[in-house]
Image 1 (cartoon, rainbow, N blue to C red):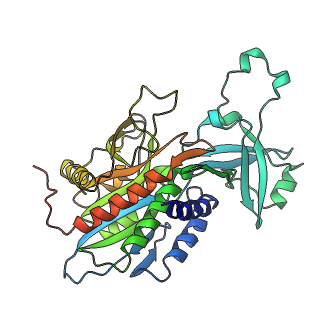
Image 2: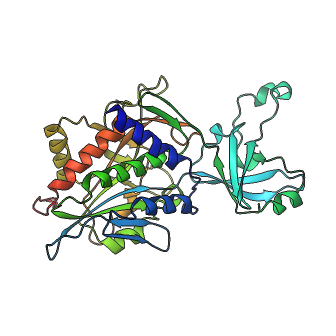
Length: 366
């Protein structure tokens, strides 16, 4: 098991090292394509960048189509103005929290190189007392990459529209991993590990693994892949909020190391309405399979969290769908934390589930 976790750790380190904010997922797209060069029936990249991997070809004339997917993109910032002094003004790209920004290390990929910078913060010694506990809105945030002028920044290949990302960081303690972009590269890791387990195996369903785009931007980037596959059942893989830190103990019972999660209810509650109430029969089936194989499953109910499932469930005539995932601490912060034991158990659960999806189980409503 220790050797298995070490392999997963190395793979996750590779995934999180790749800078790929929403709309700029190309480094992860290339990585994923390379992983499936010799072990899939078909690899397709659509115009938005979704990578669809058809794992097997069924001998049945009309096979039961199952889609399991996870988003590749991470959140970040985008340059919206370069000051004459060389400082960069920014806009949010996805749900990046302003409270996490001040003083943080950030990077830009431009002109064929990586530029390292910092989000500016007023020096403590001259901060008035009424500002010490104030979180700056993004409209007041600026990034310092050491450029002495707007012209110097532009000569480096930076302009309005250039994405900015959290600095790459990765460190571990046993099975616990701390890194940028674990949301949702750990979900991508689960897909890759699942592929390793089922490749060359005989399946009763036609299995599609999808690495999706722009989840952190508008939650709808996966829709072209859903329409192309037209699945009869879908599972999305993403983080759920771990509530085992001192500040969240009264919010739920989701623990790092407690096993994979199953989303029982997600709802944004503000702005565009969206969320997922999973198919009840699918939930019961998953719980039954998890119990039969002694895989712990943590039910999660959250306001304020959304996944790719929010809108993809509405495609065609509607999809039996569920959120499965892994607990994560400090979500959307520069460094998040997950337990690889949870991801490993999620992969084992997915493998067991895939073998049961043959079209004979009734997931209809009513």
